[in-house]
Image 1 (cartoon, rainbow, N blue to C red):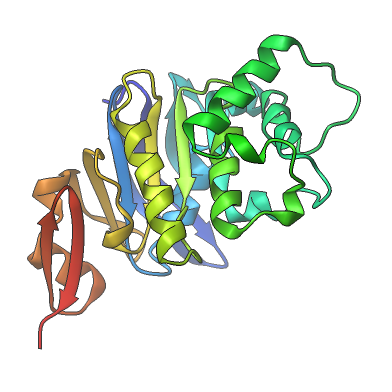
Image 2: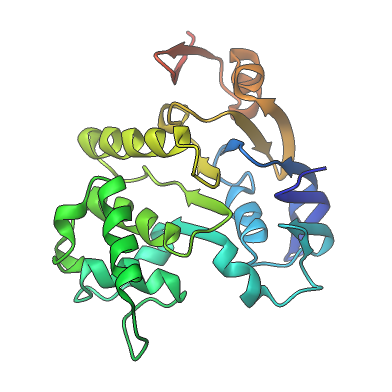
Length: 261
């Protein structure tokens, strides 16, 4: 049983097809999880479930001890920080970066009539500093690069001090420099004792930061493997999940995979 997340025999059915089919998953305090799998494996659907944005067709999802369907999800959202490209696209280009982060405390996407205290400002600046983008505080959202937006978005997700931080393909669309800078920030966060439980979704093993501890591999809506990273990140398992013969290597805490011909 997971004391942070508990997914039990979950099914999500859409259009007569099971997108998620009989998934069991448990996440405990102090763990850093990677959810990995090919396109269409069910990763995004699973993340919507555990962030309280979707209810299962069957089975149960428990978030910090509260079961979906038996609790007001508005009460859960501050406990689950979510950073995703879909969320980033909803932010107004004219929004100031500091306000993008501060509004995360209220779960809104733009500054309106809410009031902030000095503590809110201090926390927002501190989080931007942790993610290496403190100097962007007064910039407008629309002027940021993709990599800068990713890091500001993560700072925003951390603003309400969540119990869980969910990162939906944070390195997608970034160039080499942007990806490496982002993964370095995520690695620092993963090693920090004060950080929340982290769940990172990707379909590239090269996008797994150093410091992550566990892996959940999905294929066709089902769990193909789960456990500690060194147990599931093997050539044999990844070859089966992605339907291609690959060799997986680990160097300086980072994984890579190459096809075997």
